[in-house]
Length: 307
Image (tube, rainbow, N blue to C red):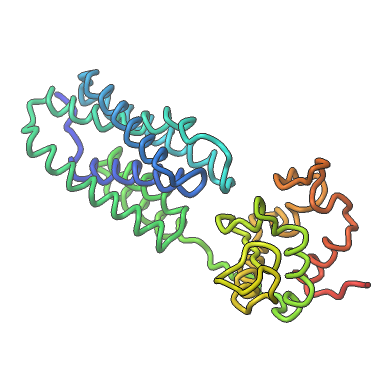
């Protein structure tokens, strides 16, 4: 007796979550340029075409779904602890193609089984649109971990269509595990930032090719560097908006991941492989006892720094 096909609607939701999840993750970590969109579309269609041309029977669909989940999880794991990676998104084309393989495999199985392909296509398309919207909403309201857990839930439902308890357990994992714990952005003393830390960042880090570039997460505008608005002179006193922006960006860089030190205290220090080295190949503060690094630490930790 041939294996029955899973619901086209659920398959569509699952595939929409995979494709949108890959696009959002690659856009966040590597680049949101048009090349990333081209990668996801091209590689996904290539994988779908391969699955369609294979004329796989229904028994091969679970294998294709499992391969897609493994490829998706591998790509997510590789990008989980990276921000703004200087790499080409095309390195991830095989993972995108592997995730898209199940799309073509599903339709090949439907054709082989004599299903009404027009109805299957319509339901799968509606599900795909729903999965895309669900991925965007999960990412916006639950955080980036939702992009990993939601496809695991739909994959569990597809692998166990006759086991509602397994599906319910997977849904419980989604809502208990993918919600980011509430993280509070540190807010060290604002006045001390303006008096001690802002001039330091402006002097040592805010060059136009470094953190004076508005595209950088840590952007420090001010006199002699990139300015906000149109001051009468590039050397006019910093505006309140410039100092406020630098303060908000700097305190956001005090958020740490796991046991790692905050980027603001780690990246400019010795042996941190900082990309903004000077012409002598040194980090901003090569000496662990550098006065600038001590000022940053003292402000971040609320400690007084000896002159």
